[in-house]
Length: 85
Image 1 (spheres, rainbow, N blue to C red):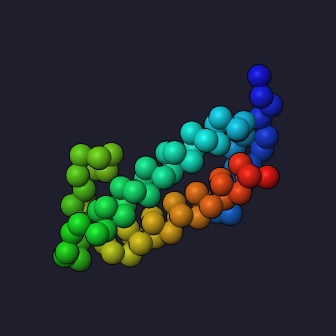
Image 2: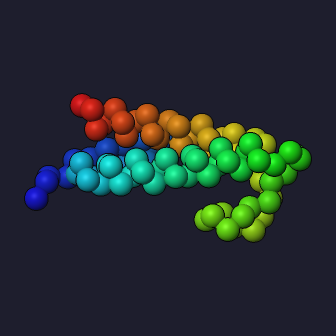
């Protein structure tokens, strides 16, 4: 059994994880990023209606989606750094 270590995102959120947990988090965060990138690129108006891919039925602004894209890109980079260290 792998020993869990403490990790902290740059946003301050902390958690304990082993390598398998980090790999799972990386996959989950990549899926979220892919969903936001698809949502951002597929719709043309200023507000986006969520679809049946894990998002709720509300509208999102450009700023919200761009913020989520940056959040998940940063998390992915941090997780990759932890996996490679």
